[in-house]
Length: 632
Image (cartoon, rainbow, N blue to C red; front, side, top):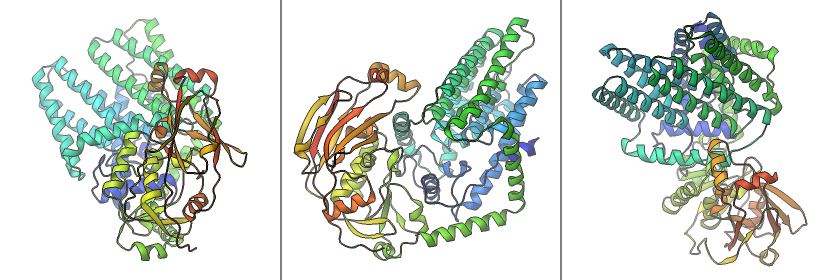
């Protein structure tokens, strides 16, 4: 059984690629090998072990061996843990269902369900140790082992880091409640010691822990607004039904168990786990729902199910449990609405192919390494930038917007802004962090390619950094679609004056700006959420907002707008929407200008989530340097 779980669970990464996801996983690997400080040198949703924890991380020659070792060790450890969880399941039928659904559904679709399940099993194990009458040395060492497992998983992604903090708080509270404040204090100090030890082993500074937490919270709280995508109401309905079923099970457990405090703490942590999985799955709905439903599918079997309660209560428990199973399975199946080919008849087929592939891969790991290295060499040849290498040499360089893999393929001296993926600069504070980096310690060169996600307005992402690029860097050459920019003396002009226009508009109301279209200007938007909107986005996500532009060519363009990103102002006129537009900006050629603009928030009821007054400000902006050389 352990072997089956292991073969269903293990991953071997993926070949190197310059696309978005392979680039950020490779960037995490680069940060790991160079002992960069999480939350300081780089700010992202993943923590120090993020590269190793993600089973789809892109191949890096210097890290692949340690990546494979980590994947094998963690997969084997989780397999033992998932099998150990069978002792918490009383019914033989439920044990079979748990095992089958675990290997065929929960372990194959996404990274996070297996870690949510593992964290909760460890938590239940810890609570069981504490609810025994005596707290012995054996129990203490078992708790230390549980803490170590929580810490290692928590070092992978900030979501798990937060979950670990919640779980440890519950464990310490139970130690105080069940035993004494002295035991609780010893347990707290032991956790702090183990956490500090692991943090130091990973090359991190203890002094940076507060700023890591602060900046990680900042990037996390901006996620719900910036990354919201997709909407399938049927899936949302089933998710809410699952929550109600879990809430009912928690209430029944508290009412029927003798140790009600343990049931309350365990139930609270369970619901928080489910909420984190919901936010991870439904902010960016689509493939991400395969975080929530498989997590719920396995967590429900860890809910206590006692046969010594009344028949009515027992029947309600069973109905609620199987309702969660049915809703979760159907939630996975209807993911096909987003183009994901999940059907009931291919669950076993997909699982079988995954297991067979993993067996063949494990049987010949050198062949896998050779294949990945060959792909790396081919990619390196394809994206070699010899002209840029001559100019850059050993100087520091960063890349916009992503495609960080280009840096590693060419062995450049990467000196990135802290929030190194432009689309993840979700808030004003994150923009300020990147801006200060460029003002105080700018890289000598920038490799530039205009990229954006979700049809967002391109220069909206990382807007403060883009202003500096357009004013404090000059173009040098263009090679294979990438523009090389070089740092020059800082311009004397400011980004905040003069103000051309400042007024409020209503949703859907066109604002004419033709009188200023002969000069570059920034657009700053003040789109405040109402009280209802703040509550709504706490539990779900911000609805989509769009910026419509009527151009000088009488065309109407629509772009996704992220309100927090628009708070500091972004270059709006002339319109820079492509790499060609960037080149024309630097050569001084005429670009399409903006005649009118308006904000669209639909449907009408969504508008209640926002303030009725939408603030608009136009600010003049100075043109950057001109292009000097171009090569192909």
